Length: 318
Image 1 (cartoon, rainbow, N blue to C red):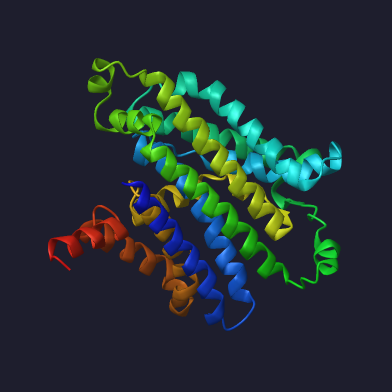
Image 2 (cartoon, rainbow, N blue to C red):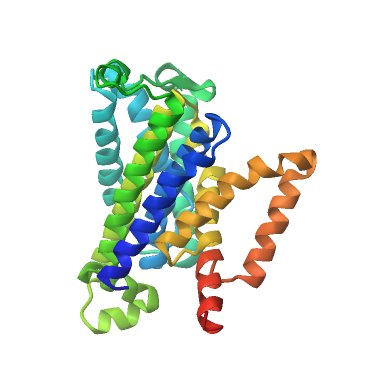
């Protein structure tokens, strides 16, 4: 990937984000767009971990839960502004990933997957059982950013959906810019060497443990910020945000779009967020149809949607 290619990808994505609202039939679609951007943010973090460094995680929703509940609890108990609570959640997630990553990342294959799964389940259980602090399974309300009066003074009258569409779009573009820069950097090349072969990477002098840990910490921060934005956007959060199914959804989005491609994984997040909205016409068969679609993609487009389509276009010389 060249520097020019990076800017082309960012420009195309930014143009799509700007043009889409002109086709929205109602304000509801701003909410859907904002949710796509949040999901894509967490998936970009998984691209760094899985696609770059070749490490699997089935517990990353735990970090999303930490970010979400930081925005719910820090303003109430610590007096922090919700925007600062986002940074607090990201910091806690980063430190926690650093601490647990050292022993966990020594594992490989399904041992690593099970270990990360255990972390996610532990976070979800704590959030569900500490009713006095987190509200338990019923969830807890999240304070707003309180920016509406300021926006009105600036002459900007945005609905909640429009506001979060813009905020999440900007955050996603910045996160993708960071991920694409990482891909081109020496650190990114070292991570991709791990993906190819850890033994070969050690042979050429790459500190395997260090770069695996860096990928894990960075992906945890991405997941935490995504969880924070989701909590602030909805104004309410439950322990489901840290649940096992949320982790599976994140990994599925990454694999569906193309886990080795930042833009592909973003596309996968958009598809998997939109499909349940579209498939509601199938009523009770919605999950069955969704699973069938995903099986077809994995069989006929094994690299993921976007990379497979791009490869076929290049093969045909279009």
